[in-house]
Structures are given as C-alpha cells and as structure tokens.
Amino acid sequence: MANRDWRISMHGGHSGEFCEHAEGSLRSILEAACEVGYVVFGVSEHMPRVEPRYLYTTEREKGWSVQTLMELFEQYAVAVRALAGKYEGRLTVLCGFEIEVVPPDRWAQLVERYRRDYGFDYIVGSVHFVRDGGIDSDPKDPDTRRVLHECGGVENLALEYYRAVAEMVRTVRPEVVAHFDLVRLLAHRVGETHAVETPRVRDAVLEALEAVHEVGSLLEVNTAGIRKGLGTPYPAAWIVQQAAQMGIPFCISDDSHRPAQVGFGLDTAREHLLQNGVNTIHFLTRQHGAIVRATAAL
Image (cartoon, rainbow, N blue to C red; front, top):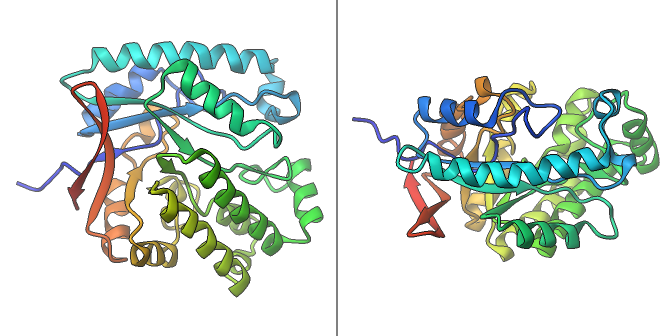
C-alpha cells in the first residue's frame, strides 16, 4: 500500500465565511480535507487589514470595512478552534492565520497580538504588499501599476519583495513561509518572468532563504502556483534546489480558498520536491495537546 502520511497541508482552508475572495463554509472545507485523505490540515485564514487603504476593490464593492474584517477574524478564531475539536479522530486540524506586512509601522505588533490574544497554534508568514501595493493583484490595479512605476520595473520590485520576505521572517519567525516567490505571479502576468530570475534577484532570493534557514521556518511548496497558470507550484525549481542544499525543511500547502481546491495538486507538489532533491516533508501536528514538529517520507 502506498504511503499516504505525507498528505498534509500547512496553509489553506480559507472559507467564504471569513474571507471575501473565498467560497464555501469552513466545515465544508474540512469535510473535503477528510475526503481527499489529509492526515493534518492547517487552517490559516487571512489576518485582518486594519486600515481602509488596504481593502480590496471587491471588499469595498460589497460594503465591507476594516471593522468587517476584524469581526470576521474574531469569529474565525472561535469557529476554527471549535471545529478542530469536532474533527478530532478524523483529521488533525491546526488553527493558524496568514499574516500581512501592512501597515508598515505596526504589522509585527499586530501579528504578535493576534497570536497571543486568540491562542493560535502557528502563523503563516506571507508578503502580499510592496510599498503598500498588492503584488498578487491584477496588474491593471492602480496600486499595482503605481508600485511597478515607483520601483522602476519588475526586477527592482522583486528585489524589494525578497527584502521584505527576509525582514518578515526575521521579525515574526513564522512556523511556515508561504508562496516564497509570489512575485513570480506578477512577473508572469506582465510577461516578464525573466525579470525575477536575474543575477541580482537570485542574490536577493539567497538572502531571503538565509533568513528562513536562520529562523528554522518550514518553506512551503504551494500548489496555488499551478492554479494561477505558472506551470509549477511555488517556489520555482531552482529555489527548491537551493533551499534543499541549505538544509531548509519543506512542507506542502494547497492554499485552498474553496472546497474544490482542497487537495489540489498534491501529487504534483510531491513530484516537484522529489525531482529537486527533497525526499522528506516536515509539518506541525498536535500531540497530547501540544504543537510539535514531525516528518513524513515522500
């Protein structure tokens, strides 16, 4: 019988109950996780953005406010903990959240406050903003266009992005680092994939990987890259190879935002790791009430 113990996701479970750009209930997502054979499923809803300038266009169109995001996050913190208890014995559900690096002057304090006040099991470190503009938004978005212009193009934006990743990792020491080369998505969308693979960017990537190595975070292979049309998960093969050579531990995430995405691309993620020198994944799980690290062979 084939080993299935590696079927674990450390980042995902975004649901329409608590996230405007997701669909389905959290319970329906956990049911999907059971159906696809997950052993451990980390739920990591987005941290609220606490200033109106960071609201997404679709959130504004629905009349959402900063207060809406905060109230939903509070509800999420209660709901995910309750559901984790109900699924005990069927699925190990971890209760986490995915961070934001905005506002620049207080995001780190907010991360620590949410983690402490709501008793989350772990945090997923992400960078979605550079110079206050979203880098995974539509390239036609005014803020994204502004950031590209201010930075002087995709390559310079990528340099700032990886510096932000390194700072984020060293500042809040996340258990998981999400979609490490997310800037590749913007490069792909504007037809400049080469701009995020230049010698200067590769040096910035290495510096960010060094931060991950120093802190000891898990570097995820995130299957959303396939869904977004990149052809491979995040991060790219050359980054996986470099991280593996540095001894950085990997985990797998489906970054699901609806039930149909739960378990998407798991076999591809496994092959992505195996083909680039990684034979073992690391993950968090719950043992006797405590969150501990464990490993599984691919």
